[in-house]
Length: 589
Image 1 (cartoon, one colour):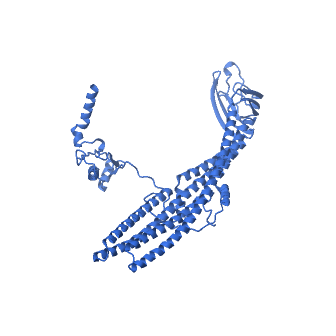
Image 2: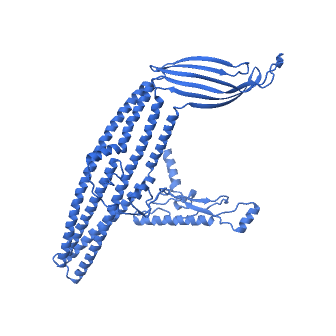
Image 3: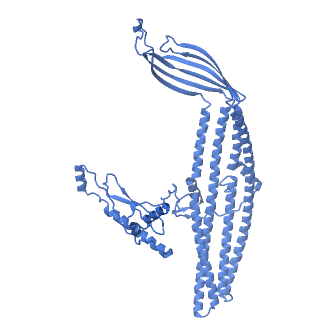
């Protein structure tokens, strides 16, 4: 019961309050727009040192209650209310904003040390910010090469692939560097107390370590990094080939749509002239009404085809812009691509070139090499490791007082110590043993004296360690390397089969497109002759005007079929070039 009372009070406060019903007070300068559900906030942008102003907004909504109708008229009324509300708020804000100071006011404010009032500018913060456009824009007139170059410059996956190449180059440098000696320069300063006496110390030395034998692990790692660099380059070519194919398809589609629009414009002009002649004949009483209705119906069909052709051009151009990654608002015209020239295909030759040049084939072949080096790295971890160790430097350590033993009755004095050389050199050997590691090290060393010694030390140290079951991952890494190698072989076989199928389908599609092209050319010739015949018969008044329009419509359709066949041939050639992996494979053939 208490819960129901609580919700009733909340409902009354929110929805029955006079302030809410009248819409007079809206906090934070926001106004809810009925039937839209969008809030727009007006934010003042004040330049530095501008005095703060208390902005009072008192805007009364055009309607206290939302309109009940939800039809088009209601939505239009709501949009008008939004525009009026936005303009009223901006006008009131600008009227309350401080005006720019004059020269005299600026001089007076500078003398009195007050900040100078500046103009307050207001901007409307929209729900969706403007999308950042691409760096490279299309020219006013572009050919297919221009579109490809712009797409390559703006394609983000290509930029990522380029950065991956740079990363792979860094990995190669790192792998080669690991085969050289590693050096560490150290500078130390120490301060402390021994037997209630303060002392100071200083060391500066360089540590050196040179791998002598690691079972080939460092070499295989370097070769693996070099192979990865080649894989990254081929991946860049793969992305580029796919992008070029997309641009070519979009370009050819737009070219086809533009040609179809031209055909429909010509057809519409001829049909309009015939319709006017038939209308005049009907008004003069020499043309039957059924003929007028038939021609009118044909004219409507032609208008529909014209509108559809215009829409196809708009959509095709938008697809091309999206493929090029440019602003959809940028408009440009295209230049017709080079005339299609028939080429002779040899499937075996094309397949051979595809297996040699296709980036995916190269990448998968390199992946086999990459994981083969991985097997070598895994096996090398089971071999002994031999490293040379060394250090050389200068050091000293001494008491702060010149004679620290004066209080003990010792009257002898000692000279101040200076930097003296110290060094060590040795050999470190690690031998894997059934998941464990046995380590042996041999060092020869010489150190400078410390505060409590009069002379330095010189020694030969032999050390032996046995780490129990610290290398069990050797067996799992070796097994994983074998699995990755076999998987890469299977991926290579699969890719080879896919490329073979793609080349076969591309050749078959090209052969079909050639047959369609030849058939379409014959149909165009026939339809042109039939149209001319119907024109002659119409001149002799043997056939009605509707027959001529039918012939014109069929002629436009056959011409569009021919354009479609040419586009299919060009697309098939582009698909085959992508399958081969060479952009201009058929250019000189």
